[in-house]
Length: 459
Image (cartoon, rainbow, N blue to C red):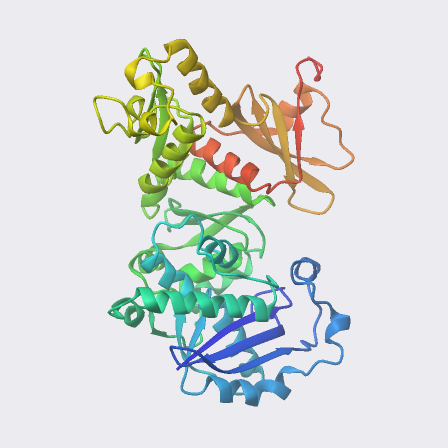
């Protein structure tokens, strides 16, 4: 039996959060057999950003039951069950903490649908619940409310059970989730870390950086390193002496800084990010009479139109782009014939493969494709939230090249190039930078884009 659940909380300091809403679906591996859904009066303040995210406020919870009033029902519906949740460590910790306040030890085994999904569906762009279920065609409503997220997790878990035919991965994901405690020698380290967005740097006793990471909640992420039992986490724990951090406010800036710092410092436990986050690229081979679109491992001495995390997704994008711009498969890495390409027979290619179409006309559409994948403006600022109230962050793109980032107060006008560059922290441009910035632009994850027309800034 499984107890598939989702919990909404007040936010706040680690282990001081309270539950504001809980939804639990008891599942026998085939269907839901029981359910429990309730708002909860946490008897503590709700963080403003949580109110905005969930829509739950203190007034709504004034007459809701307190946790001790629903504790017995939670024990009953989860009895003889494995807890299933998306990011199970978080939900299990919150539930255990509430029971601990009542003097009761709550212990269940658990399955995390994030790890389960990564094993069975390895090529997804994102494993955040909303992004993942939408990509899989699973309906989700009332996002960031317990019932909506729990129902989506039910559907996701049922799909994963179907995919795991031999149940070997399921068995490997089950683990005892007793309350995870941080070893006492690390408590002082955690105490100094914020529950905010930024980049963190883990050092050994000699001061060498051994790991660099980014998170929207630095304290929570570092705590995961210190309580996990996988091979990399144990190596970090055995070498860790102190942790430094830099707040960014902006998730994009945190990602840009992380990839830059990893490449620069080459930490021993950051094997995946030492070279490239997006190792596969599409480039234009301008040496051919009919310009070719090449899909290949990214090299530092070449420029790329787009970059990708995996080759399968890159190939799909290349095929879709060729069709959208009426390009020719035979003038790309998708070439399958020495004669006419498949699309020419369908009327989707104008005949570049047979030299029916002139190279000039064909190469113009290649240029149109490149232009379509460029930044939306040659020179612009991308504005995001800052590190504190009254502050914004900016990303600066100049002549289609990422230059760096910076911060400004709301009452401070960046109206000259001199002021901009003085406030900017430069980061070396690379294909990862463009892929990261373009991903945020395509998803409209920014406050504002400000085009900088020629002559707009004072010299």
